[in-house]
Length: 501
Image (cartoon, rainbow, N blue to C red; front, side):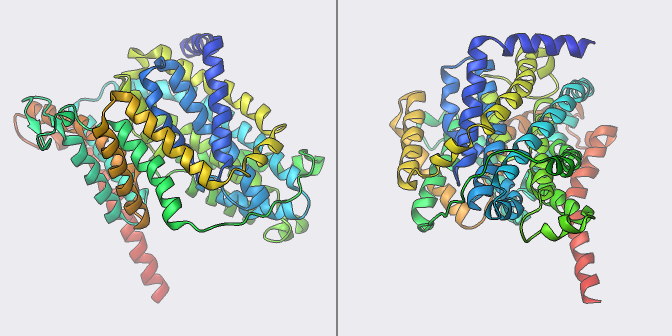
């Protein structure tokens, strides 16, 4: 009942006219971001992070959350109509959705994607409401050794999973950790790695790094490496589903949700794994001869319904580790973590007591946003398709202008602009050689916190590292970290040996 009362208070806060407006703008902008190929939610949130200087915390977090899950709704539109995923999570949707569009069933594909997103998002939000406070309540009992090991787990999982190689992920993490050391030492107040530059005494702004690595690097990479692409459009049919479509879709929505939620709760590499897993499941479970024959030919509606539900369930459930443990499980949640820190708020076990109004308003906004997105996505598909006609040079020029003005507006510092574009160039190099960028942000944000917790833990152990194995939860986390690093290699080696046999 206590959870219900807090949720009702959250609805009272989220339903104020100002917060409703921010939620609507975030959802609309997020949908547009998802529709436009190449502009993901991470880029959009990074580009808009400077608004945290002017906008109240609850309103801006509701706004960013709207962009986050709105992009997941919008990404299906271009996947289905143009075979151009707006987000990597929509790649699977394109496999069957575009075939449905070419066979004259674009409307049914768009409808099942939108409704499936709503169903999965709502179920996942209920689970966030029920289980996030319980996770936070248990996590409050943890001490510095456990917190340090949790952060080490975040470093390990984000670096090992979010990229094509563990070595590249770890390299990106160490770049972030190094950047987090710049500035004044937390205890001695001595300047570290500032090179005599006064602007670096306060450290490198996380907003500046996020904008440089995501927004500026995205625009520069597109200019330097991406060729001219001619998109062919499919004629849009009426957005509706037949009775047979409904019968085939709802089990796929539920299965996709069941697959997506666990992947959102663990640092398992974002939405790509559950969406591919959902697609494989739907293809395997297709028993009807007609439905089975549609996969890979004219397009099976289950191949759109399942992955889209898995996608949105994963995105919403990712709020549980972010809010309760301060562990981001994707690029966008890493930047959301930075947005919290801009307000002096650290996501984690204390968040539900120290900032309960903000947290419950944010959770309530997930329910409201899901309804808004359903209303936006069904009738306004035609409008989103028209957005695709914006020439890419204008689009990327706009991104650079917004990024430059936003970063300069934070401190009115020309040094920040030079640093912004230097980080942008670094982002291009990282992207060119397949280095993941999320570990850089995670290293910068969690690095100083991990350093403080390590010092506190060593103080508890009187200078001995044995304290980490003396405490059961800390020891369990050490085992999990080792499993994350070792198990994938063992599985890979075993598979290779089996293939050779």
